Structure formats: structure tokens, C-alpha cells
Length: 482
Ligand code: CAO
Image 1: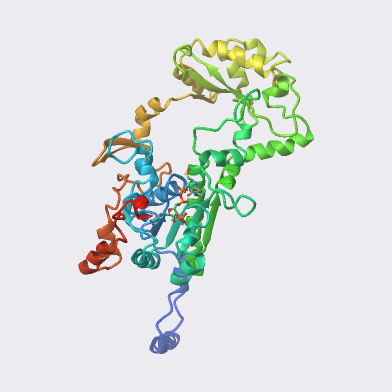
Image 2: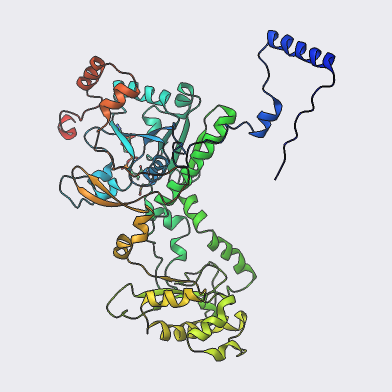
């Protein structure tokens, strides 16, 4: 343990007197400087809180987000920031709101699960951003907030008059964060949805089976994946702002986000120039490689071969499967478990390079064993000897999994119009910033509250705003007006 040295006492009376005179003189000129040792000890940070962990506020408490997002990529980002304690003010078009409120509806008249599961812990205000009074409200919000997050089609924010120059002039501290489909280049003006990003980011061409067409994944790596990237960018921009005092643009293209998640395939593309990809089962089957990374079915993306194997009940249960990894250090344990102890010393099986051309038959043999057990029995038996395996869990099993409920990863929330529903809580757990999931807001639920309590409008001004049409749906249907 480090022992702090005590300051040496000054020698003799005279020295003490002189020193105290010096201090008085300093005090009369300017405030006493903080003792250097103290400032250094904290690296300029406040003293460690004495409050118990989890009770010192949330990580992003005090951060105000002007949430101009819709559909999935942007809302994923702002929901994560809200989970971390940011005040997310979601701006929605009067009468319409985020288009997903009405998409894939399962309960008549209630916001869809698509919306409710992406907009927890936020407040909703309706503003027509193209109405002059709506623009005034937005100006106030821009001055009030720290971050504007948006994922409109390219150019839409500019068409609202909210260019970077305009926002930056109004609030030089504001961070303006955007998701778009593509970065600058030939496709920068394109509108993009999830699967477009999966296809253009390299995921689809490398997913699926060699003999079949490209396949998109169920995980929303284009939307939610890019939302995650953007959230990371925003938090780091907030951190940099502490030093520079100014905001900046934060941009995440969905193509880039998907490519970042598919980077092992760009790795393989470059390896291909130096010979076949020996861990792909195609190699063992003697099928030559082309010029681009092929689809690899359920081959493992890493150096430890793996495959999905049938388990007991597969004939009737579409999810009675397990992912089995033949990790080299536990090869002998695998041989013992599946009743093939002779493979431990057989030169055709004992070492990883010898196994590579035989992976198909090796997995077929392991499958003969897994088919005699349920996926959970295989999981238990394998984990007992450190063999990494993954049972294929259905969404039903995940929804019912107690441990996910206990950790707050799957949360049940109550909603005034739809009743109870499940959502995914904060997947990141922090010891000093505990997430409580609050239901998504109704359309415009917090309009009055934000106008008066956040932006300081008087009751009279709010009435005027209401009468102006800036926060209410248009009186006549658009078609009739045209
Ligand atoms: N008041 C007034 N107008 C509003 C408004 C408000 N509060 N909120 C939105 N609008 C307007 C926009 O200004 C835009 O009008 P203009 O085209 O006249 O400028 C209009 O609504 C439509 O916005 P949009 O083009 O973004 O919406 P869309 O449904 O046509 O396209 C999407 C949706 C997702 C394809 C597009 O927004 C996009 O490409 N976004 C970037 C990539 C992205 O995030 N994709 C992920 C989507 S999730 O799969």
C-alpha cells in the first residue's frame, strides 16, 4: 500500500513566521491556490462519491437529447442513451408520429411492439418542424439540448432548415448525430432499410449455404447495429466536448456498421489471396474457392471449427439443435464424451490440421451422439468438461428464461393502451448506473410538459401554439388540401 509522506515542519520560529506572512500576503492578493497534492490525487476529478453504488445518479444524467429519430436505427441509439439516464425528448410529427407506431400492429388502437420496444424511457412531443412556430420550438430545443440525433433520409434535416451551420450557430456545444445508409460516395442519397445494409455491408454475401442464395440474418445488424455504433460516437463526442467545449458532427453509415460487424469476412477475403480457407468445410469437401469469400453455412468464423448438430426431438422441434465447437484444447474430452477415445491417438484425428479435411464426417459422428440427448443435456454434459456449445434457443424459450428476467435483460412493462408486454432492457450492466425500464410514451404525451417546464412557455403561449397548428395534426386531410 502506498504511504503518503507528511509535509516536513519548518525549522525554527522565524521560518514559521516568515511562512505565515507569505500566506497572508498571497491571500490578500488572490484566492489561495488549491494545494497541488490534492488536485493531483484526483486527476481533476471530483472525490469518489460516498453514496452506495447505484445511488449516485445515472451515467448520462443531465445529458439532454433532441431525439429526431424514427423506425429502428436511430431509436435504438437514443433508447440506449435513455437507459443510461439521458433525458430523451422525441420529436414526432403531429397526428402521425414515428411511422412504426402503426406498423405490424397486434393490438387494435395500441402502439405496435415495434415502437414500444424501441422507445422506452423517452418523452414524446409533437411538432410540425416545417411550421414557423414549430421551428421556434425546435430552436429552443436546440439551445436547450446537448445532442440532436436523427436518421431521416439524406437531405431531410437540411430541408427542414436545420443544417449543421444553423444548429452550430444556435448552439455551438450541440453534437449532431446522424445515421444514413451510406457514407459519401455514389450511394449517399439513397434511402436504406435494414436488409439493404446487410446486403451492401458484406453480411448477406457471406451468410447462407454455398449452394443457395445470399441470406439476411434475423439479428438487425444494419439498424440496431448502427444505432449502437452511433451511441458510442455520441458518448465519445460528449467526452471530447468536456475538453473542447464544442459539439461536432457524428455520422454512422449503415453500410459501415455492418461491415464493421462482418470484418472477419474481409479478413478471409485477404487470406484467400494466399491459399484456400482451410477451416471452411468447403475445403474438406474438395470444392475449389472462387475469387470472393464464399457463404460458409454454419462453419465457425474463428479458428475453432464448429457446426450446428441435431439433438433429440429434432424431427418435430425446429429448434432442437446445438452449436458444437471442436475447440483444440478439449479435443480429448470430446473424444471420450462421444465414445471415440481412439481418435485421441489416431494420426487422422489427433491434431487440428489432420482433422480439417475430415470435418464433415467428424461432425456427423458427433451428431450421432448429440441426437441421443436433448440440447440442454448436451449443454450440461459438454460444459462439465469445458467444451463450448450453444443450444439453439427459440424466442419462446428466451422470453421464458428466468435468468434473463432476473438480470433485467428481458423486462415486462405495463402500457396504458396495450397492457403488459416484454421488451429488451439494457444489455449493458453497470454497477453505478442502474437501468429502470419505463414504457414508451404515447404520441405527444409530454408536449405540454416540455413546452412549459423545459422550454419555459407560459400557459397563454401554449394556447397560442396549439391554435397555430404547429403541434396538432393538420385540420384537413392532406389530399383534400392539395
Ligand atoms: N414535421 C414535419 N415533417 C417531418 C417531421 C415533423 N416532425 N418528421 C419528419 N418529417 C418529414 C421529413 O422532413 C421528410 O420530408 P421531406 O422528404 O419533404 O424532406 C418526410 O417527413 C419523410 O422523412 P424520411 O424521408 O426520412 O422518411 P421515409 O419514410 O420516406 O424514409 C427511411 C424512411 C428510413 C428509408 C429514411 O428515413 C432513411 O433512409 N433514413 C436513413 C437510414 C436509416 O436510418 N434507415 C433505417 C431505417 S430502419 O430500417
